[in-house]
Amino acid sequence: MSRVGKQPIPVPTGVECKMVGTLFKVGGPKGQLERKLHANMKVEISNDQVVVTRPSNGRIDRSLHGLTRTLINNMVVGVTDGFSKSLSIVGVGYKVELKGKNLNLSLGYSHPIDFPAPKGIEFEVDSKKNTIAVKGINKQQVGQTAAEIRMLRPPEPYKGKGVMYVNERIKRKAGKTAVGTGA
Image (cartoon, rainbow, N blue to C red):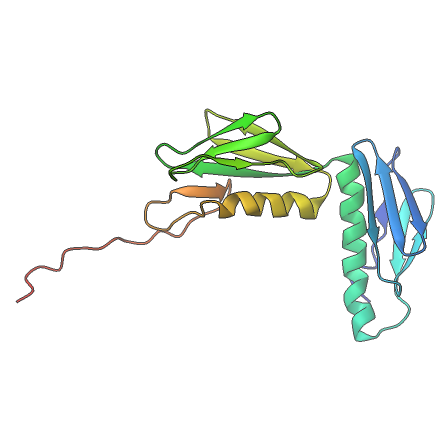
């Protein structure tokens, strides 16, 4: 039995869960999410918890069991608390500002980069610390958006400049050194 899959998912008050065919819907104070689940997984919704069961011990059913439970749990957490990823911008002259709902980034290129906010994502910018907080209710979308912002100028190992996650550690490399006499 899957250690993750067999755990029931607690449903807080104010959150409504529905299963329509293979479509699982969750509504809460922060919004609504829906996701199509695999047809083999059985989802049982009681008044204060959701339980995911699998029909057999086949390889595919075992792999889907914990995954399905985690996806449903992320949906419940998303509509109650939401998710957030923080990015830090390090480098001389690198800066970020919020224009409307979109980001305007100066990352050492010859032009500023405008990054539009995807639907369901909001940005919070602290200009003094050069940090960006990516917030939303869909965990996958928050992580993908943060990764796309990071890819605009990934951190480099020599000077440590670039866009990186707040708790990310960059393994630094030594630069070139003079060898001495080359005779």
